[in-house]
Length: 369
Ligand SMILES: Nc1ncnc2c1ncn2[C@@H]1O[C@H](COP(=O)(O)OP(=O)(O)O)[C@@H](O)[C@H]1O
Ligand SMILES: [Mg+2]
Image (cartoon, rainbow, N blue to C red; front, side, top):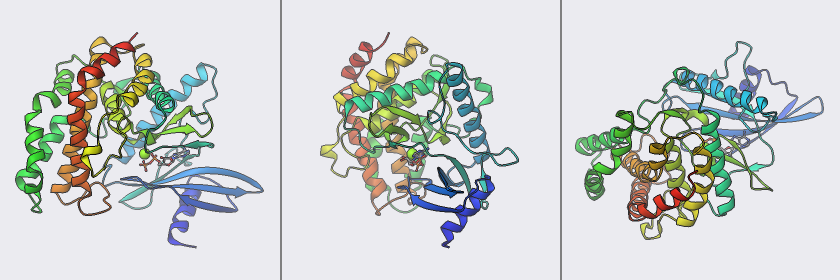
């Protein structure tokens, strides 16, 4: 048995999963987690689970995260049941250990969790079909709607300032001045552009601090590949990757989804000439998300959504470039300039969004109730 299989076997047992044999398929691993699909056979029957091993370097409060996930998935599950729907596959279902915990620490640096695999679904890294993207928009909107009456005081802010763009900018600016690995000179131009746009990227946070934009339960990582899509119908089945669920702004979720999905290029496209905001894809997502959010959002929130897209994109520029300047400590990289390329690519996208901001606002207005 390989080392990995041994660890998986141990993790399954911790969660009371009985098996005669199992087969592991490792999914494409993301920046932070490693994720495996595990098919088990037990007394002639099959079942499938997702096992994830999480690095606590990135998530310093794993217990808080898992408690948030338990509460949030429980809230959505109860709602679905109250509406007469079967929650199976519509909300992630984490397995619990005999002591009630939904996690298992392998050592101080990593922990495991196990949840049910949702069959017949796929995820996409790149949005192509506007109808599927509209479905994804509706599902992310619904996720917020299902949680709009969640008691916020029960949700731990496990990642303070996660989408606080001015704080992210400050972190990058500090790294730039410290220049710990001698890379700052390469990002001087980008540093100056970010500085010039301060009035814009600080606006959302100002609205929040002044109480003009309310806090909600938000997903905070609404990438297109964080939604399971039915492989045949293209329906958005289930929102996944719930580690970042914390109090946040509706505009964070809208904005980050647009940043990721309404760009025909990958997040790290090295040819910045190719990068642009695709208004057709933008409208597809907006036409799914905004009508659902119009049911519970304030006017100020709905007016902040397009700005959210530009803000989240600027924020990612700062995060990628900070990591580059600090010597690639956070994001997994595939080559030495990967974070630099990602930062530049996202900057090209942010600047293109700025040019299209009026058009984005017009589109949003069309879908508000
Ligand atoms: N419950 C599930 N059912 C089916 N596939 C899943 C499920 N959870 C995750 N996946 C697959 O695993 C991939 C990675 O999972 P995710 O939770 O997004 O982790 P990360 O992005 O941090 O690697 C997803 O994009 C999806 O393809
Ligand atoms: Mg993911």
